[in-house]
Structures are given as C-alpha cells and as structure tokens.
Image: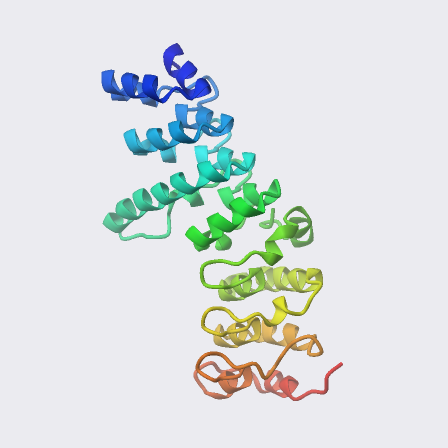
Length: 280
C-alpha cells in the first residue's frame, strides 16, 4: 500500500485522503500484504469521517475482502463502532440493490458477505456482544437472520446461542424477535435445523413475553408457525402450552387456531388436536 494512503487511513486525515483521491482514484484500491484496504484500516481504528469519505469516493471498496474474507463492515461490527457501521451499511445496501436489480437478484447483498468462518457482519456483532450494532444491522438488513455460519451450519445450535446470548432479545424492523424470525425463515429442506434452533431459543427464554410477542401485524410466534405450515414447530410450541398464548389475536382478529382451521394453512389433525389439550 502507498505509504501516504496508509498514513491517511491510520491517522484519519480526510483532507489528505481527498487530495490523494483527486490525484489518482485508483490509488484508493491499494492493499496491505494482508489485503486490507484503506477502508479496512480506517474502520478498525474508528475514523468515521474517513470511512464515509472512502465509501463515497470508491463504492467498490465496500465489497473488498481481506485475506481472512473480512469486509470493512466485518471489522467495524467486530470492533463495535456503531457510528461507523450505520453509513456503510446503508451505502452497501444501496450499492448491492442497484447491482442485483440489474442481475435480477436482490438477496446477494454486501452485508451478507461471509468471511472464512462463514460469518456475516451480524454474526460478528453478536459474537463480540455488540448488541446495539446488531440491532442496527437487523433493522437495516433483516435478511441477515437467514444466513447460517459455520456459529450454526454444523448443527451446534446450543453453542451458537451461548456465544450469541443477546440474539433472543433483539427485534428487527418487522417487530419480530429471534423466535419469530426463525419460524418465518422456515424451509422444508432445513426443517431439522430450524426445529433445533427454535427449541434452543425457547429453552433460553426466561420470560414468556418473547414467546407470545406480536410483530407489527400482530402475529405471535405461534401464528407464524401456522402460517408457514410447519407442524413440527406448532407441535413444539404447544408442548409448552402453559407458556404459550393460544388465543392471541393478530390485527385481522385471527387466533393461531383460526388460521389453522381456515384451510389456507392446513395443519395435520393430530396437531390441531393439541390446541385443545389441557395445559401442563
């Protein structure tokens, strides 16, 4: 990396950065031996103004990864620099969307880039217990919930949640907590994984409000389990019937059982029967 650029990144000298960019914009693409860009270095040290300027002057830096597969956002999230995370995330989503719309794909976004441990920026924020950073990431980019890291792909859900204890209490921009997001992301080909995660979430929740929390549409986790046609999840939740509110109404005045009986979201008869089982 050019010595002047390196000193700019570590010192946070925005004026010098602008001068160098004006002389040769390609200079901003210089990397260190570990493949860190000026954006990586500025994010690590915490130079907010320089990070913003770097994003504006050279958008391609946002997607650049170093030798460990980290983007500058990974480093900012890991360091807990909330003020730095905000702007690059919004810029990354904007850049990603414009590129992906052209390609007909709106899910492959920059904040979803995974490093060598398959961690996204959200995984890194949670791993280092930066709950405020994680909350911002969830609100601005809720699709990150559905990305499985290496903190989950091997089925070590208990370990995952012990590393990321704050995840249970976080709320995304749909008003959904981790339990609702887990259910909402239900996929038939990952049924076992989804079920394990849900069971772990439920075992870690120490107050029942989270188990019955309505999202912005008034849907509780049980509503969502019915809507997503996941009999396994419905059954799992109803085993905790003493803690689950089975008669909660969403904004359309439907209870989970109403939805199950509607025919739109068919649930096996044996699961329907458990709605009427006595509380334990």
